[in-house]
Structure formats: structure tokens, C-alpha cells
Length: 152
Image (tube, rainbow, N blue to C red; front, side):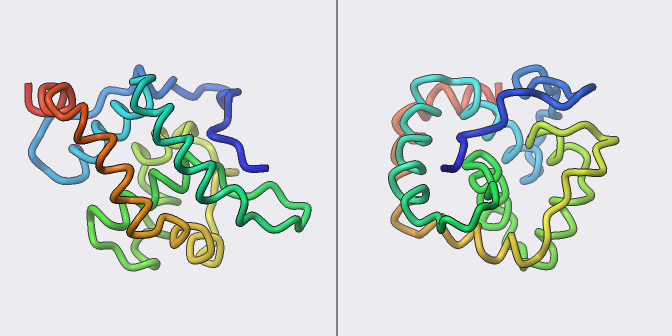
């Protein structure tokens, strides 16, 4: 069964709610702050994780391996869509962008958190257009709060 996210932080990792992302109009910063807001807002993340569990977890094959957690699928899927990344670009960002790795719960020194191109290609498409529309609806219903967080 897929986990929502890894509860136990890596040694030296900063909790997601304490990460300090710049408040700019640059897309990557806005995506990181938005995802952080989703993670720390219980009524939003509860609804989103329930959707993800319903849509993604039953599709997991019983192959004996852990599988990518739901938070990782959401974060990387949103970056792929929000930045219009190819899988190669997403692969590079997921493995080398310090702040994205921190958002996934790793430290900047964490060399164990690496994603294969195959893992990305198998997991990220699980965020279907319909599923993303439902997630968007949940986020939009709390839109004033999110807007104030992002743009002050």
C-alpha cells in the first residue's frame, strides 16, 4: 500500500512547514509555496490525499517494492504540469533541485533520494486529467487563503 508521505524525516531534513520559499511571481516559487500550503492545511490535504488514495492506491501492483508515496507523485506531477517539463527535465529537477528535494522531505545532502526516469514515467501519469481537476476544485474552494499566502 502506498503511503501518503514519509512520516519519519531524514536526519537533517527541515519539516515541510518550516521551509522558506521566496515569495516571487516566478512559477517554481509559486508552485513550491502552493504545495507547502496544501501540505500544512489539514482540510485541503485530507481531501487531496483521500482522492489520491482512491484513484492511485488500488492500481498499485503487488510486486513487493515500496512504490512512490502519494506526496511525491503529487509534487512531481504538479511540477511537470506547472512547468511543462518533459520527463527528462522532471528527472533532472527531481534529482538535483535542492528545494524540490526538501519539499519531498529530503536534505540537500540526501544522495539516497533519487528517481529513475522509468519510475517517473510509471507514476506521474497516475495523476489523470480528471484527478487533477478534482484536486483543483479542492484547492480553489480555499482560494482566498492560498492567494493571500502566495502574494501577501
